[in-house]
Amino acid sequence: MHNSFEDPGAVAARLTGRAAKGERRLSGTLAEVTLDNGRVVMVKRGDGDRAARAEAAGLRWLAEAGTVRIPTVRGQDGPWLVTDRVATGRPGAEAAQRLGRELAALHTAGAPAFGAPPPGGPEDACIGLAPMRNVTGPDWPRWYAEHRVLPYLRRAVDEGTVRGTEARIVERVCERLPELAGPAEPPARLHGDLWNGNVLWGADGHAWLIDPAAHGGHRETDLAMLHLFGCPHLDRILDGYQETAPLADGWPHRIGVHQLFPLLVHAVLFGRGYAEQALAAAESALTS
Image 1 (cartoon, rainbow, N blue to C red):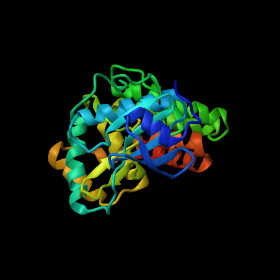
Image 2: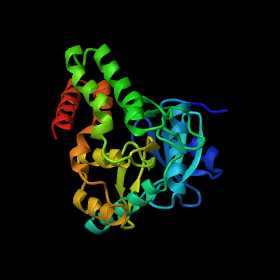
Image 3: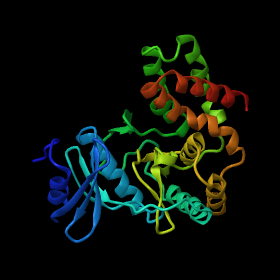
């Protein structure tokens, strides 16, 4: 039986079967726990059972591809998730190029459909603190509009973050997605929330990915998110990616299309500044 008020050390002991020897609180929802065998684990209290289940399933699904390094899931119960800790170092150009190659291989590992949740993951998942539905669709443009852009646009309009008159430009992008999306791509295995904060530069010289919102999607969406918030050695990541699985011609012009989803999620969570960025991205998608 889980208890959301349980001590992180007790959670780690219960889910790993090892006694906890030390504990360091990193925030109200995250702690580092040292076990009696010397292993250090991260104990995270998610926003309820569904969020923790989605994250655990996503980490396992990404790890199964055997490409990018992903922390091992040691246990999940109710809102609690226990994973190995990544010892961090400094970003390096070589690690970045390798991450690009590994990310390309991860995407190529594929997914059953656009919107497919990870095996064992809930349909009603989340991205950060926002709800995200993993509902499948037959083609990317229609699925992306219906399940990744319009739900957040509607909520932003309802909450007054985007004016009704402004929403029309995003709706126009959605209508034109079949022509704006570029050549058809098979569903890729996406991290789904690939901003710089979810890339850890390991002391082992490798990049590691954490906190996914994993699902089947378009591979350019992960790369657009890396562009959105910046990432060390991004040019080297892209070089490594292109070496392994070259992107379709014109992909830089489609970055704004793929950034609409994360920008509207941020508009819903954090307000008007991100709404203005989303409208600018929509404008650029229509004119590039």
